Amino acid sequence: MPSVRNFSLVKQERLTEDVFQMDLKTTESLSEYQPGRFVMVEIPNGLQQLRRPLAIAAVDLLTGCISLIYRVVGQGTEQLAKLVVGAKVNLLGALGNGFNIQNFQVGDQVLLVGGGTGLPPLMYLAQTLAQQGCLVTTMVGFRTKAQIFGTQVFAQAGQLQLTTDDGSAGKLGNVGTLLNAWKMNNCRHVFACGPLGLLKAVQQRFASQSVPVDLSLESRMGCGMGACAGCMVSVNGGTLNQHICQEGPIFSAAEVQL
Image (cartoon, rainbow, N blue to C red; front, side, top):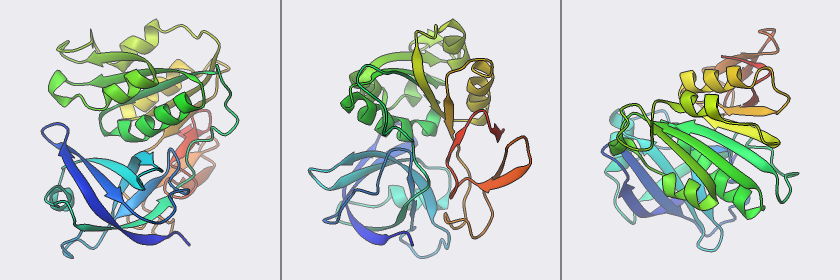
């Protein structure tokens, strides 16, 4: 069974107008909080029955802290944004399969592609790959400069390519613009997380290529453990349905039906 534990809120930071980062501390082991996995966060006011799924954006083993990044989109996340330092936050998990990067080696070239609140799992992934000695290129897209967050992490991990819809920062256009101009250069693996349109663009871009592509899917979830069947996705040409929360959230682009 997944663990259920209380964390202490040690930092609450507004990254953009509606995106926040929570840093949570525990004295217990953080070994299960691997890149690509997620947690189900209990809304502390007791009025919201369902937990909220949030990807793990960073883990600091030295301080015993994990970072969660979320966008305020409703009453539940509004309550999270009101929490102050010292508050207790109850987490279920870590959940999901996570990114399979155990066999990556020094010098392996890896491409990350993301946008919006799909960036947090890629932030943790970029840091981990850089620590393993991989050569990381990250393509990220935002609608406008005011919505940008997390880019410093990617720049520190390797090469960053940035685009905005209005051209207020980086290259004018969307991530598809960057993908169309990108050369393979012996890429070992591609990872992507973000809006459905972005995931489809990545899936189509590499459909005829031999490089493996993994997509981190986002979904509304009721339980996070596969019991409610509220986050199903089709794989293997539509012949099989799987839970994003349990068999995912990471799926091969060659198998999943978007």
